[in-house]
Length: 547
Image (cartoon, rainbow, N blue to C red; front, side, top):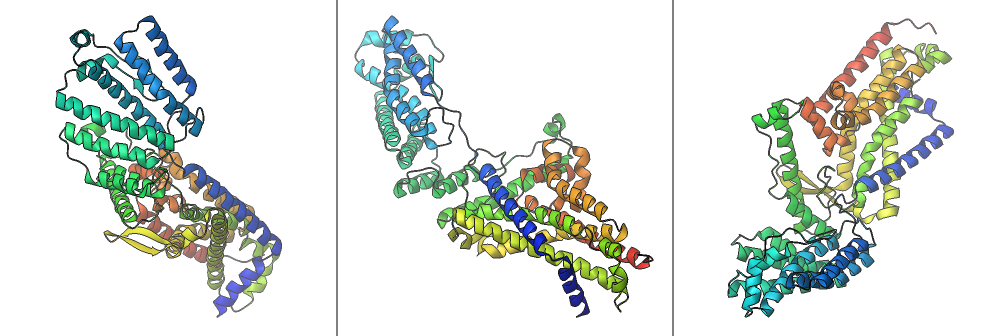
């Protein structure tokens, strides 16, 4: 009871409406900043180069000019390809905007239409001249040529080479190819005209079947099943979460990132040991295996997920849910500790400055119990502030992106299988785990304030270390500041524990240098927190109280 009264006194002593309002405003601004950060970094990372109608027009005019100078069958065919492409380019530019670099299926469709039209026009020319021996002889005598007319996305390429290949087809092969390319061009053209993603996927589906027949390949059943789902559901947009789930699954399925051999390792400039490099690749593969299972479960049960993919895997499609934004609340511990470091740097020293320490010690209370009450107060207040900050973020995210998703279940991979658990239970669990590294910083604040009796020094050192903790993984990973890797062996690197739990690329790259992973950060934080606290008690109880 005495301890509880002491903790209550700490709350009373440090409470003021002015400070509360300022802290509340800082937390609101921090939440807005985190939402903007997630919106920027969490958006689709798969980009294409911009397409311009001017580039197409230039190539089109070049083809027509060449045709005017020499109306041979090659130039006629090339000009025909450009003529049929014109509307598709115009429609795509009109839809996306001239110079658009938006990542979307229309870019891929336009590129594939270029290629398919070349084949179709070539086959049409041969069909029209099937009995024309002079035409066949001229084609056979054509020299091998490189690309004729380059477009931004795709090329009217090696037209003569494709003519020479096409005349060698047997009647059966010719009929098969002609039917395929005609249907493919029709489907992709319709897809672009109607802005219907599922029509493009239907064309891609047919392509898989075609190549399986031509090259006697085994058809990937997972791929075809996903394509069939998109077609059956008539999904119009590739940003639909069902499509993104499918694309992500196809990218990670059976994905294995191969570790370099010892010979390759010695040829590389890596500063990590070979054992650490192998461990790094094993961890990456374990991570992708777990995500593969979650993706399969999400597809099977028609669910959204909030998986994180490192930005260096930029080929992966992505989408954002309200959970992705609320997940950023786990970063708020850095802001909360910074606030605590500034506002509570004098948790002990101010007692001495004001002289209230003498009144406090005149009571039948041990100094160790006084310090314990202050330490527990710091832990409780920090957790309460973090909860308040998370609630602010919850409200902002819910208003912006809807509250419904926040009350759905969270998918996790645990014990060798995918499980659904309440999202807020998962979030709270991560907060509790994240408080372990935070406790180290709180013990440091108490230590500096009690030993140095300097509020300014305590605030300076603890706030600098707090902000520095955010940058350690990034500096070691991105900028090669390997001399900083020593901090990865201390709790300082683990304050923003969310970087660790979602396996950010900064964290993983740094782990390759250090060889330390998640459990180490928690253990070292807990051990040093207790050590610093007991050291504080030992020194403080031995000192003379002169002021």
